[in-house]
Amino acid sequence: GAGVSQSPSNKVTEKGKDVELRCDPISGHTALYWYRQSLGQGLEFLIYFQGNSAPDKSGLPSDRFSAERTGGSVSTLTIQRTQQEDSAVYLCASSYGGGNTDTQYFGPGTRLTVL
Amino acid sequence: QQQVKQSPQSLIVQKGGISIINCAYENTAFDYFPWYQQFPGKGPALLIAIRPDVSEKKEGRFTISFNKSAKQFSLHIMDSQPGDSATYFCAARFGGSYIPTFGRGTSLIVHP
Image: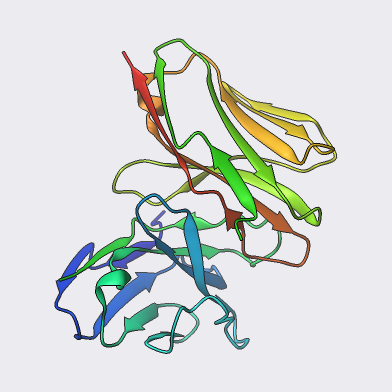
């Protein structure tokens, strides 16, 4: 079946512009996660959605970052007034239930470059 | 503060050799330790995972060794193949948490 898909695969933007990154999770998965992967760094948690519960936004680095999940499926990560330090690969993952040992399935990521 | 320390940062191994990647953690509440494999241009994928009630878990050529007292765990790749060339991340989660803490990754290159 289809895995997690993300679009665009690459995004180049100018400093100060807003960007939107999209994630389509695996059908039936109730949990959705966003991570940021910078060169030489591990995966940095950004935000977590589980069903209809309020999202866990504890990993968002600043108020320029926001995310929403519509209809419990597709999610959009928005970065306002992008900065050069926002350049990274943004990964989305989904899992069936969000439990402690639940397997997270990752998308291929969106590589964001801020000039 | 980095809660999961991974080493080495990069590793070069000859085909047929053993690749060993080590991780150390600080939080004794961690109770689930997955390893992820990431190929260029792809997202990470779960490779193998272990709970601290066992000292070793083996799946094919991949083995996790776990030392609870030392708070260390490692991934061994036996008979390493060029197709194993990827970045490997260790991670740790504790009960009630859905968010793993990741190590910084190890870039493995297996030469033919």
